[in-house]
Length: 324
Image 1 (tube, rainbow, N blue to C red):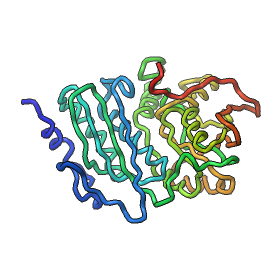
Image 2: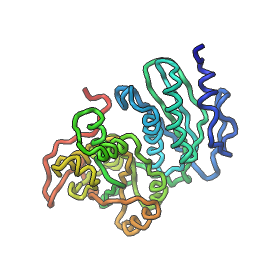
Image 3: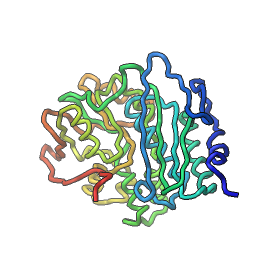
């Protein structure tokens, strides 16, 4: 007998390790009842992933789950928020219990790691898609936003850039590598990004603006510039590249272009006033995260890519969900 919606919810979603004290009522009622700590603001973000657009329909369900939840947690990281709760809406072509079992393994492994409790959601029939809403806390008035930057602030990124694009190219068969370990590493970096939660929290009071890199640095930095009314000069040779990306793409300029346009990196891009620069390395060292200064903000509009103080004519674009 086929499982109905309530059977699936009871079997796969009601039993989880995380049971937070700030959850008064969770799955099983019309709404969850949740308690926000005194002195905190609630940070909320929603993202959808659609088969054929954000992941292949035959991809490993555990990896898809990790990617889906990590992308949302990364939004909380960009605000300096602490994750707390998540709701999940799944649209499935059929009640495939093998797929669900693997999906839940990947989903709850990451949720447990960040002490995030599933508090609600929905399942329905249709083309395969995943919609997640995450909730987190941030001390009142301390959230990192895109609009706080000033002229003269320095532009930083965490980690390395470009690996997710390399992994996607391998996944789509656009390029191959002979080293199986290199292939596995780059595929993992596409599917299994780690949201920079601790780094985001550490940057509160130090960074002037921040966001996560989901559509490519060249595109996402533009959001800070638009909201803050500024321009940026980016020194391309300072972009942090991993050894694996340099093996994947031996032409350094092409590797740098991958780093600028690579989406789904989920590293943080943030700006720092001159007086706070000395605190960056010490602050992030406690999180086990490196940060690289790649440029500076100035009056004007848009991003200028430079090398040896000369502008580069690289026509690059980030990911556009509605591009043909």
